[in-house]
Length: 391
Length: 97
Ligand code: SF4
Ligand code: SF4
Image (cartoon, rainbow over all chains, first blue to last red; front, side, top):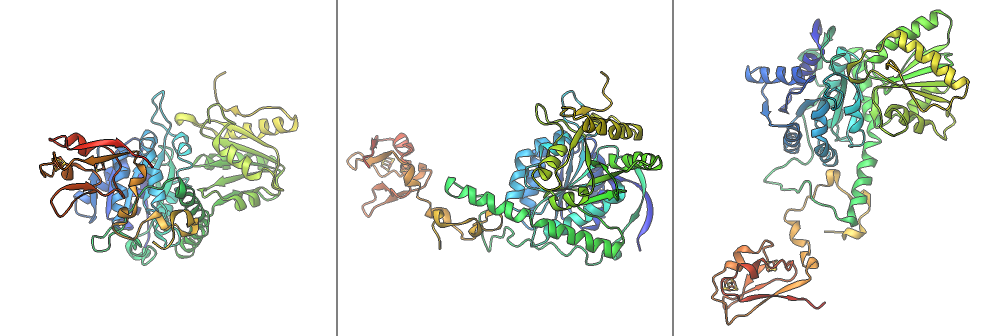
């Protein structure tokens, strides 16, 4: 029977990994992800989880150990944040190209310098193109549910890709919240045993991670891309099955009060919860505004996004990351390219804020709506504006 | 191997680019890399086997008389054998192709 408990989101993720009965955890502690692996190392040490906990000397080694473990057919979990994710960077690409179903929780954190351990999306966005399935969660319940789903998605024979489950550092990771905790009996056969098709086996030797000269590299890249794109169908299928079995439904793009809205705010991560307060306030004043919450980040949900914004006239995108010297925030760039040239193309303004753990209040979201509409209505040539910065 | 590298389309690439045939590295013609070639002088050779042991490929084979020579399908012309030979029995020469 599922039970309602109060717990920190980080512990909830660790509990999801325990429920999924992971075989190997290779991780290095880094704020704000430490509680996840700390909890896992405790349950392994206490004999509550029959798994190998590999203490490594860096995140580069953590991901490298995960490669070996997943390649051997073991269900593999790790977690990291900020600088740690960047230190893993080159190995992330190897995990996805080798199609290893590793699950990793990321407590999104700002990047140095200056040194900052608090939340924003600089770390995620730098790993955007590493070939992993990536999605965002907004609270402890979501991160628990969607971490469980991550194992099922990653290991599906039609997918076989590593999955990153993102949650905002501190704003989600360290918050104690009530949530519906599933138990072993509830899960049943939701996550079937790991059945990696070609595990390393001395009796049936294979070569993994070979090299591809120019004559083959393009074909390898294309085959990877052609496999990642349709994984969206399996992701949706798994989320639907989760919804049917456990009553909580997740979608690649979720909407809040978007019916009849002329202006939509698009955001990703936990700040969308704050944005709903702004939407409620403005709606109470009769303003036709709504919110689009991006959940699936890779593969990018083009159709779902276009569908979510089709009836709106103006779009305002909020980013928690700067693309230095670029077009603004990475989320906004993606939204613009997803809509450019489609029949849903419409004016888009970008706000950047919530960097390095700075809060964004409901009032600031209201400001984004009014200032955003002002920029669009007056055709102002502004690439993006920073919200909440002292000028 | 059914298809040559240059005939393979992206649909022929296995999941994770895994190579299912063990020992397939032997098919890779590293001899293509070579611009120089080792030449043995049997008169100087004492059959110590040092070149055989040091060849990184390893592509040095022994003939019926016990002398050594390189299998040019794999020999990369790296010159390690010549460097290691205690008798100076191997010279590295420019290869005419
Ligand atoms: S040149 Fe290098 S590869 Fe060729 S036989 Fe000598 S050691 Fe081996
Ligand atoms: S190292 Fe020199 S002497 Fe020894 S076997 Fe090889 S060629 Fe002959």
